[in-house]
Image 1 (cartoon, one colour):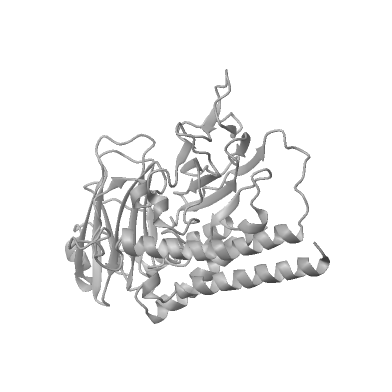
Image 2: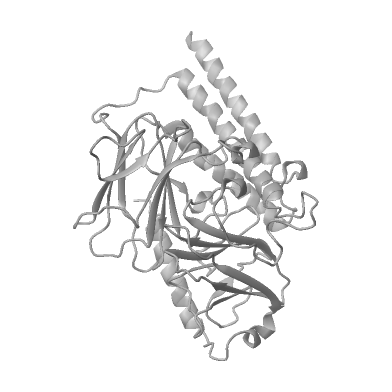
Length: 435
């Protein structure tokens, strides 16, 4: 191909990418593309959400390489999505499930290790197809997993995990299979690092490499490979916007009843019955039990949420998100609380208040200027619990919060709330530091 033809091909790829980004932009406010109801705040956040997918897509298109993988931040403050967990550091690496890899990790000496760590191998990256068919049988398969409850770690906090199509004869260490019994092949390994004690827990060091690829290097870019990457940027952004909009609207019924049965899967000012993660409702972390709903609060409204878990989970988190599935600003607002941060009542029950102004009680979740959004509770169990947790929600007046709480409920001072924010701000900077 001549230099002029190469330039024309790159220009055409750029034009295609811009067209795809334009179609993705339409998903910000088009009812036909399942956008949330239009509000000033919602549209402003929708454009940020769109640009977050563009940010992620650039890195993925140019640097995802199954032969030279690395753990990238799959979700971070600049590209929140998928009703993300405020307690989680999400990481992903592209792999070829027909090959073998080793993950080497180290828990930092001195500081506390994270509350929970899990690796899963997936056949596709959630949302990349742009179609809800991804949620059907065989659409997105988890071929294997390893979590911290069974992770073999040496005395110095170091560990290795082998990823391969099958376990080698005689191998007794940590292992994740990359092909399913049906022949599905993993294309990604996804890690979630879950924090409880934000002041003291720190992320592990992680490294992944394809076995027998040391000291090799990827091929340099060519005009044709760059053109393909440029087009992939547009495809990724368009498909992610399309998939998650439709998922929230059609599957979760976040904006109203879609299947005509008179109810919504995500009930308004309620939580649905806790259930184990399953592909039909979006997948999620394979060891989680989920309960979700939406909130829609007036200025004088509040929600009282009561949680009970007969079987103690390895992790618990309750989180608020906007209608784009972006977690709220958890660095600067107490809009999420986990099992370490939550203060149980004397009867052992966990009671939370969701409202826009500080009621001066423990376990307040701040809606941070969002009158509408998602409610999500996650309980993590390495093994399915004998009895599932329960969750109840009551809509109350913000002025009557204390009437609905035990008499022993203490008062949280402004100084204590500021200390909560200080811990959160420092943790989030540490979790996502850029150096």
